[in-house]
Length: 507
Ligand SMILES: C[S@@+](CC[C@H](N)C(=O)[O-])C[C@H]1O[C@@H](n2cnc3c(N)ncnc32)[C@H](O)[C@@H]1O
Image (cartoon, rainbow, N blue to C red):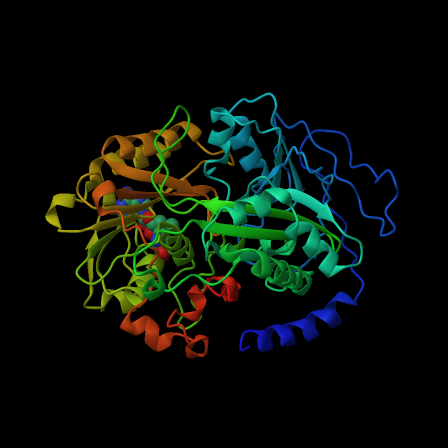
């Protein structure tokens, strides 16, 4: 019951908000193709239909990237609405990405050179992919694109005018969803993400949020009655054994008050064998922990030397592991000290910080920090017993490939940003860095996180040291500064958004 009280308060706030007039217009597709068409029947709400683009060669948006704003609350996001899907398909896949990087994600997809695949962007932070086939090449696109924060595979686009319950029924009665739930053991439905387009832009208070939660609640009510998979997981005493359940994720994305995209997928957190173009994968995909794939990583309890810490915390959240007591982390290009400060606050590790410039004076005095002034590329890794290396050095991508190669075998985990010149990613260097790490026995993943600018973050984990469970960042210091009202021991700045859906599926 406790979880419904805050929802009720949000409900009142959002009711007031939804009554106000919304003036913003849908963003036109950023790819080539015919302009959006009107619904043949003419929608009573005047909503715009979405026109598939033929974006084999996507055009780079000239829009200036709002690099500095983590959250943009300036404009409600009203997407163009894709065609409703028919029960027999085909079903598109939707990806979320950092807004203003839609074209880069489309470019990444177009690198697979599949003639059947078309991409377009219905709104900031969202990319719609159609024409994926049931083959290896299409599967390679679905396997964790670098610029995608989250995927909604095999998405149904469903409509029900003026009825939350009707929309929920349309989702709940989708035959393929019912088949998957019927075939899955009790407790498999691990998470439901109720999404609205503004979340893809990092908005803190986007429109339709309350409505999307009500739809999600109604779907869950229906499924709980029908499928054990949608009920609470059995306790280990009940089963008397450690069972490894599939992790099913339902994502409901409201594209208008009456139209939803819905995707039910099994999330993967195991090593995938490398087949052809597919990269060996580690970490969760789709991401069951964070709606739209965005971990909330703001530290509000203390002033940080720089905001760069957010991208490190996004990487650790994605990896599902973190340095702990007894670990030493080498932080290359550490000044002014955002990453070092976050590691001090959230872990019990010791830090060796290397930079040409000194750190923030407070960090220089901290007895868990050893500062070494000089060229990070000349730092001799063998002089430490480090288990982690993190790097935010500004350097040409080729040098970052060399750096990764130099550190492979010396540490168990690496988080390394690769920065690009101009606006285009250096795809070849990025591929080379991942290949080098894989060839040296690391699982390699790269992501463009919400807090990355013109750079990507490489996450490299030595195979035998892979931690196969999700950990949360915590330490005595973090716990002391955490918002205890959450009661979960997780610092409030690190809580997944809408955590109430995580593991709260009840009988
Ligand atoms: C983006 S800043 C790092 C920000 C830092 N991660 C934080 O959280 O505050 C890049 C840093 O890399 C350092 N740097 C660039 N090239 C370097 C090199 N060859 N050796 C040491 N430091 C270098 C710069 O001095 C700069 O402080």
